Image (cartoon, rainbow, N blue to C red):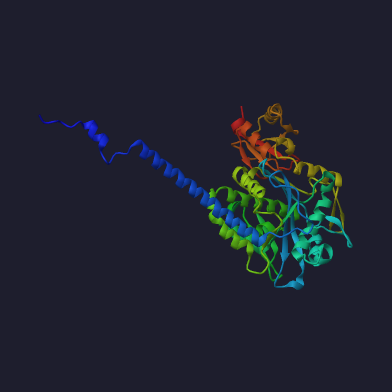
Length: 451
């Protein structure tokens, strides 16, 4: 009698079927492949960073810093004007910005110091603070030893001078690390990123922008969101004749914010692929790199700190502090600016504090844009009930205000964000047109909140 094959048995014995052990082996190979890929990406990334560190990291003639970027460190960024093809023109620091970096806490604060700030420079007496770099540059061997390069001498004396001006030693602190960048390096770094996006708050016209050949030219920036390459971003960060040196420091901090946003929006693979271009940009074309630093880039704690910041920090929440007359009492000695030391101490306290509503201490003023009697007062009472510090309300200039708008005038992003959520309002990072207020945040109540 003929035997009929069992279909189930046939399927079980089919050579094309995949048994459970085979599926496990396939799954294991996929996992192993992914692990190898991750290790390769991390390895390539670290190798690129190590190559970068070999090119741009220099010894600090002041001695090694004990502070870890992972636990909290102060980093001085010095923007320098060095004409290496015209050494007779000398050298000077064009920008002084101190960064408080807390890698584990995931926060970062900026503090800009005007270059006309008066300090006492050893053997020179009262001087502008930007002269410290030039003096250290020209006297590096005398100040720090025969093996000290001019750049190392300039960076070290600038760091010591800033530490003294901010009285960091009284807090058991100092400027721990220094980063020096020249104009070419600044522009090349932004070009390596493919440009940055800047929201220009108002029209800027500078008829006397300095050119490399020591002439001047006219530069203009229209308000609004725009993409800038390195050369254009450098102009935006350096121009000051349209307003003042204080306006320029605000733009410089805005550019730093935009650079971090450009890095943050890339994934880790894209960042690794970006490193060769950054290496080419910062090493420059001459014997001296366009960017040099004492920050140990290849150390594990530095990498963890920078990686955590790049991965978690929203650039809009970077603390931005500036020494300027609206925040710090000032007198003058010719063109030198002499700042009130008590106000400086208060500002440094805020700069060293993790950003948040408590550290912002923002004041809010409400303006009635609808004409409904009592609307600004009702809104002020509502905000006060939510814990905001409210100034006396007022009427907005005549105009059409269909929606309520929150204007962040000062550096209070945490407070402004929560306030906009409470009012379900639009948020604008600029001063309101036609309104002068002492408040860091201005609210114009629109028709959407009218009864």
